[in-house]
Image 1 (cartoon, rainbow, N blue to C red):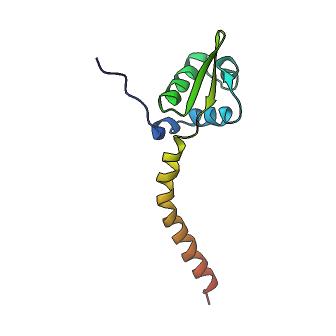
Image 2: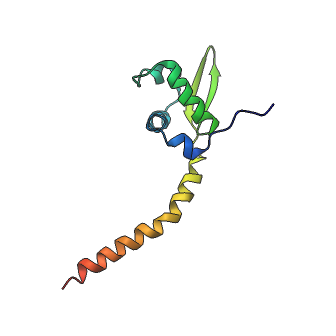
Length: 106
């Protein structure tokens, strides 16, 4: 029997709710009850989003008593940063062309 498919960073951050979850967990460790209070959806729906983020290794959870606390684990975001950095050359080139055009419009 094979394991369930693991979500990658790109799939995980594709959803706006999951991006909000990452932002919420960026500077604090929170239990699902507190996390759920920030979203207009069921706790089950929030749990599903947390599971996807966890499978992408963007968050980590740890048991404290009967609760599980979640926190951001930002290291996998480096993959996204590296991917985007390749495309910065195109943005930089367009800005340089615009600057040249504006300065030499005469």
